[in-house]
Image (tube, rainbow over all chains, first blue to last red; front, side):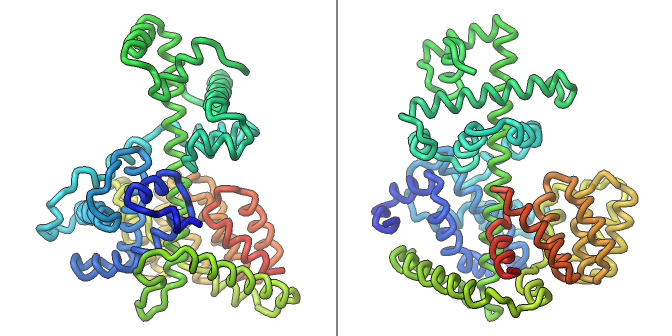
Length: 196
Length: 257
């Protein structure tokens, strides 16, 4: 049972990090309403904007945990989620040029920022990689997607893909990366991709 | 395609598995060997692109959760799900009950009585403005005033003004194909089916809006009473493992019979 695994905050972080989609979706729904009411009442934000802010907040929470920017929970997951939300609301005010943001938004929680996402947002290779994944075939496509999209551990990939060990899964993943690079090289020769 | 010692070293480097000493040695090799440096740079770029594509896929999933939340939240503002600790046993019982009900529903409605118009109303939800609120697409370029006016009208459900302004923006900046999604949705709201179809096709050419354009084009055909075309598009969505509306497409296809 999923519920029985959740014993303490370490467990919460572990399950989030594992990318368990059912758990993540439940977590998303669990605080969505309360977040919306809090943001609307305290910061006077309209419902449409709240939906977007909450999505970005949740994504930042997940990536901060996945990328081990957050490894210990000193407070509840909800407190942390709402701290990220404050930063996102602050960004929202900045981008919408709303001048008078509430004072308490100036308090920034170090680990609660979403800068970790910036490097991915700005990748020039995203569209190229999407095209290459369509060409690479199986089992490489699934192996790479399990690791980079679903964020499975090597152990979990070994189970899912039927590899004998996590070491073999790691080796397979690298071979797939190598194949992806070979396709990139081919594309460069054909003038499909830039040389950078 | 196998691996050799060099590959193993690169693999360990990318995974962060080299010791400090090994790392220093490897970085020295990179500094001296431009081919190796290029190879490592390629891998890093590919990994970054994969992470970036993964972020896109996760965003699409989260958007779907948000849409589920909005669909399940009553207009009274009462919570869709009570703000309490997740009770997974209860969740599984409910899921099982829902699955049974769905199975029964599919059986019961095998000779469907729900009209395509009703299904359209059930599944259609105006696509949210992801442009101006994120502030990343309105950059003060040509035609910006039309874009801002168009999106503003779109947000206020003034679809005639939205369509007129967004069309003028696209005339000025035709390469911004993604904007055609908002134009097409406005035209769909106005029952301008042919124009909407053309613009959904245009929006599909922008990778960032391709998935959304497909989903809304399926709904457009439903609204226009063209169930066959709608089903064909829904099948396409089903074949895309990462499509953000895959589940809904499956449900809608089942409902269409």
